[in-house]
Image (tube, rainbow, N blue to C red; front, side):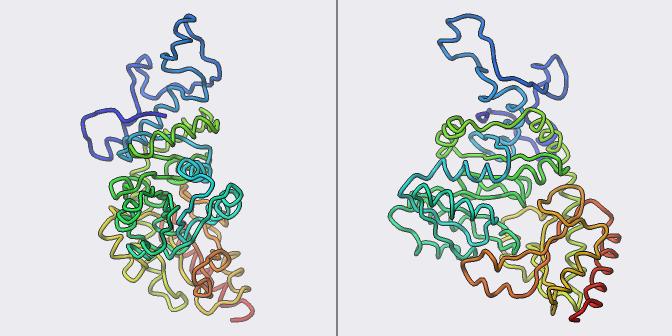
Length: 395
């Protein structure tokens, strides 16, 4: 966990290559050491009592974890950042750092489903009330504030359905009511959208996805502005949150290539999304970079790019046909999560979790993550799946 330090401003690619590194502290080695540690020894009783030694206990930080938090802090333009053992753990910690019993939370209806579960079960049991709002509400969210509203949670684009929210408008309203703004920014990462630059107080990433990039580590990050930093670091320490050094190191390794990988994910996904948008057996394609997708104009205004995750409607399909479509895929894997080098597909079911207009999602929705494979091979794989769906009983 680190505080922001003053450095010469550099471009994103240079930050990714160098952020968090200090070879001169590590005998000249480029990468920081992977330190497995719990106990830290003090040179004398006076130092131990003073608490002035930089490292006091493994859970409270090591050179390995400092390297990653330092890099995240720099990329996010934050006052400080902390690590969590998963994206959901990061979301939970961020919420708990700014909410207490009797408080009210405004939560986007398009949030990641485990985030909803945390609100409906854990926060509710702690006496926090949650109200779900239309992700496209913008400044209209002002009508939903109550005297005890302490935080607004955003996720842009939204989970499964990819609505782009007007983050700045929501933040402006929230701050007038003295509420904090949280954002799940896993899809864009700070490379394509920096939440703190748009009024967000706590920026959350499931580092499991694009930061790690190889589907082999669970990791979460939270970056805070000056207003939110002291409570975040206090709760992080009090709850004993810790990430193992090997996972931290793999997060650092993934971060170095994230810019190159995201550019390829973007290129491949746009090619596939555009191709799908022209097919007769496809309804709407929910990709923020495509005209007609919810919030496309906001995406053009605020975002620097798009990534590999989007969804589309499988038009006029039965359950049997959706199953046939998914089972026919060979290159696309069937699996949760995303952000790795491999392409994935799931049957997305927003109608099972939405509070606002769940009935509008009555056409089967397929969510794709486009990996680093050749897009022509991915299109051929999808063509076979469409044919299998057409041939299935009920066509």
